[in-house]
Length: 166
Image (tube, rainbow, N blue to C red; front, top):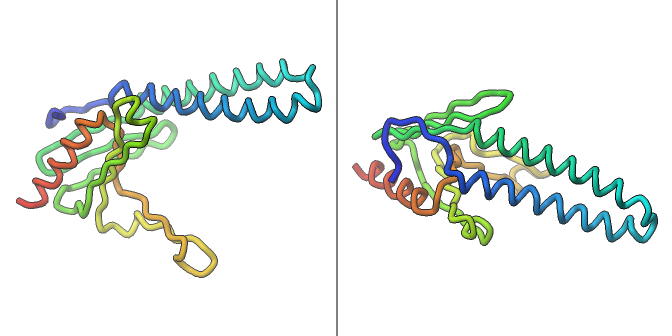
């Protein structure tokens, strides 16, 4: 259960998940570079390794700063999400405007015990139209996206649904 009327940070499992995700991506890219570059110039691989160590460290630092920049607060009738490193953004989602709330938890998220809660409203700002022929490739981004423990995400989803009914 998430406390009401308190400014909260994301769970620490989210930070661990983000860091693991970044390190995995950097590792996969390094392995691909190693496979192709190693066949061409095996002596240059050590320099490439240190470049990837620096890139990985910078990416991890960015994820930690990003994690620390996100706060949220839950009230009886709304959810407020404050985020941003360079550009600060505060978004308030009244539950009466919520059309849908859905949770997403892939394999890696489940390993860390977290889920992403997407909150959809009827706002036209969540539609990004793309493609050459209009909106055939339209993407729909939720108005609110939260990374929470799986239990808290399900609880908040149910909480929003209960406020919508009343």
